[in-house]
Length: 107
Image (cartoon, rainbow, N blue to C red; front, top):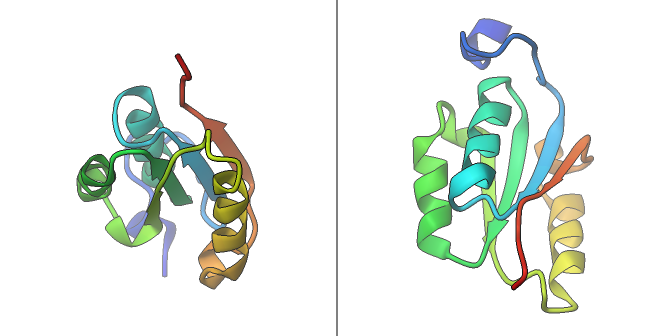
């Protein structure tokens, strides 16, 4: 496995072996952050309220195997803990988080 297989030519650095959690990754800035992280080789766990938007985000990235997603509402008290539990019980790719990016707004 080489860096060239994972890292997009637009990424000036590599995040191979790193894991990111991005909330609000279904659209807008959150989606763009997911795309950039994946283009640099990171494994990304994405959450959003909208399941369909999460599927679209996953479909738009260069390597869909680097993206896992979980729909849910961060304002629900148990949901943030659910993300952490999923990450810790997930595949080896998701067992430790190097990057956390919160891209949600509460009105």
